[in-house]
Length: 342
Image (cartoon, rainbow, N blue to C red; front, side):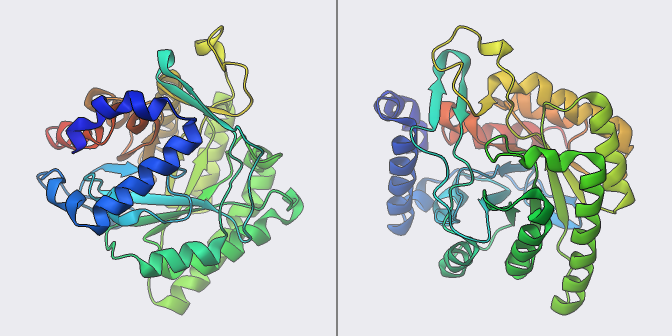
């Protein structure tokens, strides 16, 4: 089934990108519900690794954005991921930006999206998790609503953190999407320091309340200057944040100049992002010097690319756009490539 994806891809790519996304996941859900997806799922050798105090079955995870509402956990689990990250979820449901808002750039093995945190809200996400039979490692990515000003952004993040804490193995704070106006301003050192302080305080109280510690990760942009990356790294250490995720999508267009859709607004992901995301991982690793782990994401389209992220200093990796172009076989390839390094 999964090996047939290259044959099906031309038919999938004949559809609008967002429509294809929904139909593909709907088909996966049906296969999982019927038990077919589980029967043909790859049998991967366990290669466990402990990161953030969590034992992951392997180093390869699903990046946030593909399953925003945690509606497809059981099907996605059959790909062989060591963990899934869902979201970004906001306190209230919101439709996101107007369509069309997702574009393929096949010659560049890339996507541009300006979805804008379209999601059904945190209550719906929690209901979906509750209804799912998925019992693997789950990260939940949280954000602010589009109409919440940055002065009150912390309130949205705290509301989501309280809501998802009991269901998450780790929580990612998304301050780096380019598709919510002003969101990236939260990466400024003074603003970020205040936000991290409040998040850490809330995490401490929630750990006492629930009797378990749920790590916090911060996802940053690839478009930051090197000094800004170093400044964020120092803040993460100061506030005892548990992990950094590098990186989100980029607003840079140099690598795709002249290609169809290149000037569409939104975040660029896939192969053109790979070098910069790896550079940010390497810079973070040098600055952090082992103080906290890094999850590398951006442009991974092969097992060799996954090894590249680990060599740069990441402890885990995540996939998204590579799945669109390579299909589920990419997961097994990356898991095997990283297992061979252990």
